Length: 76
Ligand SMILES: [Zn+2]
Figure 1 (cartoon, rainbow, N blue to C red):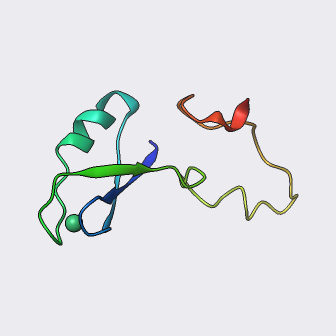
Figure 2 (figure 1 turned 180 degrees about the horizontal axis):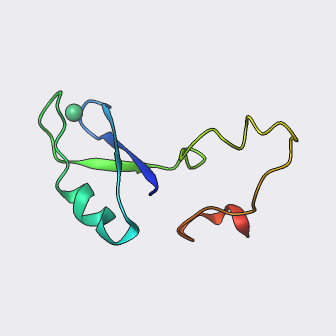
């Protein structure tokens, strides 16, 4: 399940959550900043931070091209 990162537009607090693609938007709209209470968030696309597994691969070869979910542009 992909990890999504959102940044609070008011104070910059970063919130992470895991969600299915289908429920992502619903999760995002329900987010509340723990710091300032704002509900305004912007999604962060920081290289798709699912795991660090590819970086620690001993062979140095990326296991697969692209990202799960198909929303990422890295496979184009
Ligand atoms: Zn905030």
